[in-house]
Amino acid sequence: MLESTNRLLVIDDQQELCDFIVEVARRLGYETVAVTEAEAFRRAYLDFNPTIVVLDLQMSGFDGIELLRYLGTQGARAQVLVASGMDQRVLSTADQVGRAQGLNMLGALQKPMMLADLEAVLRKCMKPSVGVTAADLEQALTNHQIQVYYQPKARHVDGQWIVEGVEALARWQHPQRGFIPPPVFISIAEASGQIRQLTEQVVEQSIQQAAQWHAAGLPLQVAINLSPRLLNDRSFPDLAASLAARHGVSPHFLSFEVTETAAMSDPDTTMDVLTRLRVKNFGLSIDDFGTGYSSLKQLYLMPFSELKIDISFVRDVCHRDEARVMVETMVLLAHKLGLTACAEGVETQEALDFLAQACCDRAQGYLIGKPMPGAQLPAAVAAWNSKAMMIDVAQAGAGN
Ligand code: C2E
Ligand code: CA
Ligand code: CA
Image (cartoon, rainbow, N blue to C red; front, side, top):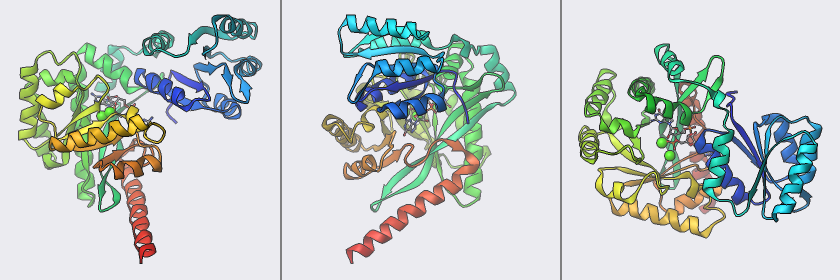
């Protein structure tokens, strides 16, 4: 198993708060596990070996102090952050209990928790000893150690979700430091200017993989993430087209996912690059839509063909009316603009059923498949698609 340097375990009996913390941590590059019960917490502590624990003090049926004692008896080295809606005195008592147990207490976060405060604490706790540098990345690029994993994307056709494509996601397993989370090395690459070389390798591997699948009778589409930095590079569309031509893969099977950031400082060049990609028949998705990283204005101005609804909305559709309204509205917006809608982060059947009902065109998430090496894709796709067909046949039978 790939192990990240920064691992966060959160326990809170409010699922929504767990989800919020997980989302913020994940975006910073943490690997995360969230639990809502004491027994699950103990198991997760032993299995996952977290580097930071976020602990709610007051939960129904048990309290956080018990768990602090448990961590103490285990000689836990993880940093411990206490979260609670209780007053400051209770929080500081909990802090003392933790210290008396020999724990690395990080202090307390008062609920309701503010995004900026949580982000600041988590950022501070990230081991700088992920410690990879642009020089390490240079070596990885030279030695072709960046591997591409592929996550299935299913399309809703005639009442079934059929996998027809994948998203390419870069993976770096450092020989000494282990798994380096993509947000960590992508930001190094963006800051150092290595992003072009990294993207070229991802694009080339992905197209090569697509060609192999196609030759084996599996005509999968492949979506590749594109850093906003490359949207200032007017030569990128020609590079993508020539790589596709070299491997004999039609651009119809390929698309690029982009988010908006401040780096889109030059809207004219961005528009030029995106339009030329579309003219060459590549697909174009606006990624993480609804998060502030991707805005309505970008959607309005740029020639996108797909809107990807951010995981933070999709995750909540089973327990928040507001999330359902947002997702339905984003699907409608996409359709009115002539785009397809893709929901990411689908983890439950209930969420997938809701998306079908909301007329969302595509879905992606751990329920359908996690990111995996290219060689594992054909079996995973066959298993998912044949299950989808079987459910359909069973439902048709039940209707007769
Ligand atoms: P993204 O483009 O939003 O990719 C989706 C992320 O969500 C992936 O994380 C994926 O593993 C994760 N994910 C997918 N389904 C689920 C689910 O059901 N539940 C949960 N909790 N997570 C899910 P990953 O691979 O760690 O990538 C993180 C980000 O790094 C990506 O976010 C993307 O912005 C960036 N990235 C990855 N590869 C590349 C690349 O080759 N180039 C560029 N420029 N960015 C990349
Ligand atoms: Ca993406
Ligand atoms: Ca995304």
